[in-house]
Image (tube, rainbow, N blue to C red; front, side, top):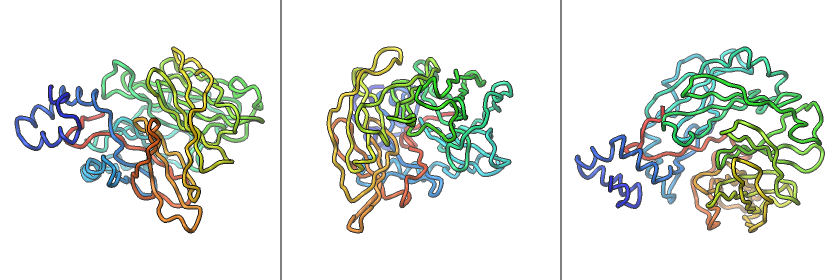
Length: 379
């Protein structure tokens, strides 16, 4: 396994794999690839949108060659799924896609599948048991076409690389309801369902609209923006290990409109935040994260990043310490537009690809992984 240490990049290992049959046998072995993936984080290879399908990263981005190879090798139309109805992509993580199929239309509980488009494998999840589903009452729409939020959770430490978890959430009138499915145990279980007032005493006892937005993940926790009722917003945190929700104070001062959070070195958290007042400026905050998923210490403003004012920016997610943004022109003199990445450490901007959808923030799933020759099945 010395190749994993001697060859500095995935491209070098890919060239070695193509140069010699003996090298290829070693490099494509499961043991070698597991070690390789532990040393090299997956790269952002592209985007999946409902309207456009898979959109690979483009040159001059470093992952463009691997992205083109994945686009040609994988089945991003998911034609290998059962033809029961229209399957919709809801999330992507660790080379897997999460889809659901609303066979009867406008249902709260739908058929859920987790897929590996490169190896054309899938798993159908069992229905949520009736005794758990009974806790869901008057769910609000989280998007125009659905009443729940479904997403993948990363594998825990020590778990098999082909294991995964799925979290199902509904924002009901009086409380937040969530369930988690473990692929290893093949069963659903409930997560403690707090009332909205438990999460924010300033919120009313009953809400008339969804209250969570901007889902992010770092250090074993998911983060959302909890809408302000009636004052400044809060952050909501789900500790995946303990499966508990808790509120966290966001940076003081401006009202946060969008945010993206990432794990930095030495258990520190970084956050880019934008406000409705300064749409062309991002503020970078940092905080020390305490042990066991407890609330982060006070957020400290580190830097302000000015972006070109002739564009409007939408945060699409975070991959390997980089914030992915879509920018759309809001002035006739804006010469180009598309998707870019902003490095949390260097604040360097890189081009990823042309625009995904004009005029608004598209429903995007970020696909990360490895070239086909260096990939392992995820299911």
